[in-house]
Image (cartoon, rainbow, N blue to C red; front, side):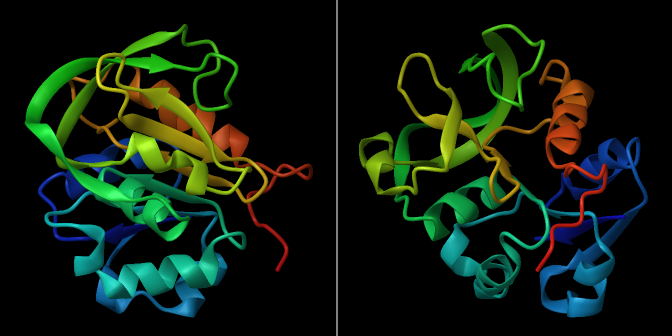
Length: 201
């Protein structure tokens, strides 16, 4: 089961539809997530949402509690929240991107982008970004796997040791090419040696 934590975003249902291609999906408001749901989940997905990560203290606590215990994928706001909790800093972009399709320079050796080349067209809906000048504050296990080729903004990351993944862009948007392949790659990377996604506490 995939637990989709909802931040009241208009894209949540589209994201649910994409995730449902891979497993049963349970959607819960961020204020209504409990431990029993996480104990049954094979993955937790932090949805996009308005505002900035500090507007969501419940999700910050949820991430702090469960990172390293269950695979986590953050999308847009979720991506920013995860990297901020890992030591990154958030800044305002010089240009607001809302429904804009751009290139992402991707790392073809990463688990996220297996068999996907080195450039991907992605859908971006954000005015904030992770500060590329402060990536050294992140733990060594956090690997930036995609960047804006012009401005250098981080667009995805993975931490295979703790099964943490994040996408600044929207894989559920029709503007993102190969959204299904992205989720399939991330799901495969979250599998442990026994073929199950549960990580031992």
